Length: 243
Ligand SMILES: *Cc1c(COP(=O)(O)O)cnc(C)c1O
Image (cartoon, rainbow, N blue to C red):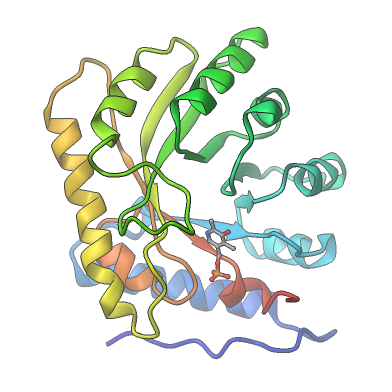
């Protein structure tokens, strides 16, 4: 039995981000324990696109340690002024010509979905003597409207990326099709975990696919039951976004 959150809407002055943060953390822990996992294995990424700094600060004050941004320009502005010990992740679609900025700003890039982008990030990271942590994004259902590499092309992309000296592939990310019932997303989460296990078992020296970035506001508990290590949650934490 999972607890369904009432999404706050609209956002008001008295919007209780701290309470939502603690509710989510409790749900994360409960989902982990249901399948015999340690809650500490799962990290919450606050998906903070379009969320203003005041609300971000409240979430950070409550304990949020990772912020996930989708747009480079928006992220750059927030990172410049949010003076807090948080880790910034990039979770949106990334253009190769933004690679230089991306490697300067982000500890983890969740959305590497093609070789040209991996190569651009590798060059950009080399320029600043950084080893950039990345996840490879997989398009599990072959949806034309979504980015991500197909599961059949994934092993080759991982092998090539693992050979790039300034990238470190840490795992996989996916966004399953949207379902009103989160149970319907479960097969996709399971598929991502199995894909990870398959590639990992091919035993490329030094390759450690430890992260599974999967699960959002509506389905993160199911994702955790299927092995998620990073859940990307926006609406359930910050309230609904403007359309
Ligand atoms: C916005 C976003 C999320 C969070 O979505 P919610 O449903 O609001 O929790 C997660 N992942 C990505 C890639 C996003 O762009």
